[in-house]
Length: 409
Image 1 (cartoon, rainbow, N blue to C red):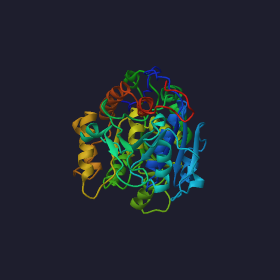
Image 2: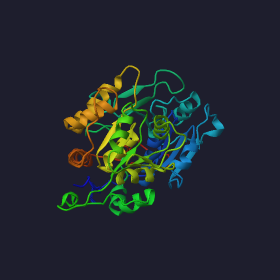
Image 3: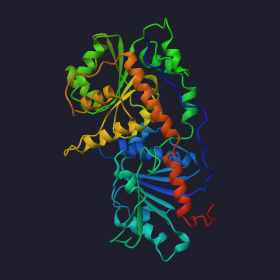
Image 4: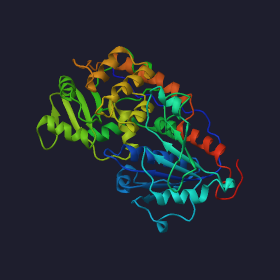
């Protein structure tokens, strides 16, 4: 019995409307795991893909050298080294200003924005957004789109707006680039994985039934590992060691935790019957392709969660742990939205340290059930407007006149 094969997104998804080109300024700080930078880069590139002009202000632009080495036409990367002085800022602010994930704009930036978009100049109305963190909790729909008046500082009297990504139609949606279905349709999953490991890999099945035909040969289980430091990781290793399998280990905390558990300075080639394959630092396209090539993906944070959903393969999400255990409710809300079966909920709770017990075995029948769950969720998401489309619609409603002087479309 075979493991679930990769099923690409259909070629035709909802058509995107045409929008005029606006100037966007996105401000981003890199916290500790590059997730904020990953989201902001995908956002910037997604806007540029739709013909927008983007300045991405980031305090550690070096991480983009490996995350997005080719850059993107229409995206201007600028180092945000606070405080920015007037000489480092363009003469005029753009049409849309995005503060990503609670980063704090210094007075010079606020004054720069206010000078272009004060209430005394209604013909140059701009859009100032607080881009918030992703959650499936009920407060997201309630808070999405709410105004946030600026009460003090050089921008006092102006109004920001909360923009919440989310999983339902009453939220800001998820990032999904226009070319994603075509990329998946063209992707040679078996050849990609064989190049990484030197072994035969997961077949691509446009028809899910092709993976369960009688007589199909057994294949090694392929698992990708992108996590923090989950306590049950040794249990997962023990499970993989008992069967022919391959563990694809991303660089960073996943790799370091595995070294700690094994007590080695480098990963051995094998752990029992499991082949351990350390991956190089991958760009975002390479990260996606590993998820598409694996039967089961261990992902963490927010950007990789969204990419796991678009991959459509079974996965477990290692949510960012918080001291007050607020992540417990966040995880449960996501599992409810996902309509996760009981054994997938159990795996998530154990993986995240919320419950104890043995991890459910990663057997073909169970993984196919989990894939069906993820595929159904992916279909629901495809029926909704993606995050960039929603931002563009909001900009068209809000920006009275772009700095180019053209009228709204």
